[in-house]
Each structure stands twice: as structure tokens, then as C-alpha cells.
Length: 171
Image 1 (cartoon, rainbow, N blue to C red):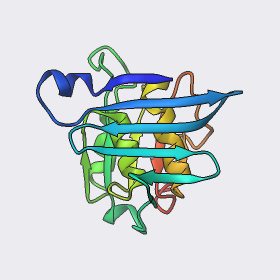
Image 2 (image 1 turned 45 degrees about the vertical axis):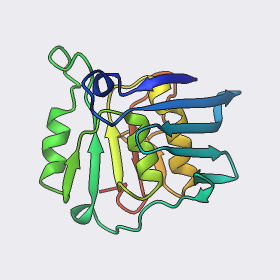
Image 3 (image 1 turned 180 degrees about the vertical axis):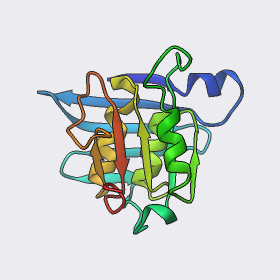
């Protein structure tokens, strides 16, 4: 599952938040994930059962204990004006409950940053498999939790994702 340019709009506007995302799926489960961020020259990797790494160094999610101390990130669908599930209500609800919410424009980078402990959580309602396959594995292998926003398992073919350090997931 390949996204050669996750964060296309950022790239087109000269914003330095885009990445290459590659995942290997076998029998319905992602086994290997790679997210390369060329702007920071960082290569995030994960192998199921073996951990997540940044340039060879093991990754761990943050230890932030509560939502009110957490830095979150999110994203929006391209057709935000036409969709009811456009994430605006969810964003507003989280803004008053956490430290801050960022919108970086690359799901792959957001997920890699959760795995690296740079973000405490990321959610997005409308995504493609290429956006999240590698990054979801990274978060899990770094000790985090990945579900749908409702708490169920993520359907990789039509993903809606909530990824966190695990401590703030239920909040």
C-alpha cells in the first residue's frame, strides 16, 4: 500500500509537511510500515512484533497522562464543504478539552509523530488506506493504541482513525 506523496496540498504550496508512506499488507494485516519525511530526513519504520523505529532508534509513544495536557492533531476531507462527517464539530469539542490541536496536512506524518511521542493523539474521520496503513502499525508497535473514533477496529479499506499514546484514548 503506497502513498508516494502524503500531504500533496502541502507539497504544492511549499509547506514542509509531506511524506512517502509504504506498507506491506499480508492476509488483511499490515506487517511492515515505512514513512519517510524528506524535509527532516527522517525514516520511520515498523515491523509487526518487532517495534517501531526512527532511523534505527526505538520509538515509544508519549507518557502524557491526560487529555487536557495533550497535543493533538487532525485533518479534514478534501470535500469538507459537501460532507456531514467533515470533522469540524469534533475539532471544536477537542479544542476546549486539550492543550492544543494542530492540522499538519499529512496523516502519515501525524501517525509517525504519535509513535515518536511528538504528538499525544491524532484523529481523522475520512481517509484512504494509503494514508494510514504504515502509520497505524507504527503507533501500535511504539506502544500506542489505534481504533476508530468510536473505539472499534480500523477497517483499512475505509479507515476512520483515532491513534493515541493509549493513556488519553478513552477521554
